[in-house]
Length: 134
Image 1 (cartoon, rainbow, N blue to C red):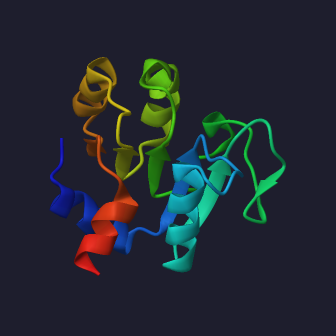
Image 2: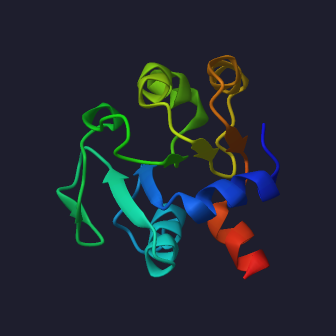
């Protein structure tokens, strides 16, 4: 698992992020993080099968709707029990980073990423960490 500093270094130069589980509800952490990243110049791709658009951006129904190279990193806002459901797709996409939000922790998922050589960080929020460093 990466340190916060290592993860921030990756996202500062890799601006295309898929946000899995992004909600259109303004009071939700996923919405606030997505809005923050947009305001910071990141290109986000909402992943949510229920909505056509979130924050004016067309949603992909599934992470598997993306192709390798379409995103630089993935930010997960899902129940940790669902992370392994995404494992095969994440390995296929081979992102530069997988970021699992606060409370989104799965040791088997982390082990899969580790075996595949995909950098990851878990139980941390990029918005909070970016706000700390300015």
